[in-house]
Amino acid sequence: MKILILNGVNVNMTGKRESIYGDKTLDEINSELAEFAARKGAEIEFFQSNWEGEIVDRLQRGGFDGLVINAGAYTHYSHAIADALACVRVKKVEAHMTNILAREPFRQVSVLAPNCDGCVAGMGADSYFIATEYLIWQLTGKRS
Image 1 (cartoon, rainbow, N blue to C red):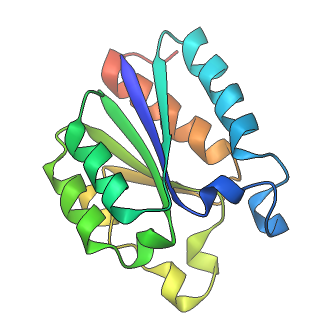
Image 2 (cartoon, one colour; image 1 turned 180 degrees about the vertical axis):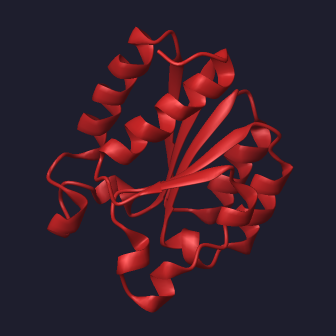
């Protein structure tokens, strides 16, 4: 089973930007997440882009059984990514390191949410692990 972890605009700056996103870099998070998933029999592909069209292209290419997406600021206004998510016929979880509902009003709205199966927010880097665990449960039919 292959899970795509897709990160959008500015997520590559995690660990280098505002402290609300934590001090671990995206590479550190990805490394830990790959080990976590491998222990559970899942393969992870990581993709990050600051370009909306590249994110859409990656979604359209497929080749994964489940998706965790943190589109960064695109979460709040990218109807192009939302439309691409609607075309993807796998379980999809939106993930955010911060609690978007406790932030500025424009960040409290996700145009992606209607095309995802769920959302994990406010758990720091653990949001990725929780979302991945959920997908593994859904794909294997069992809780580990």
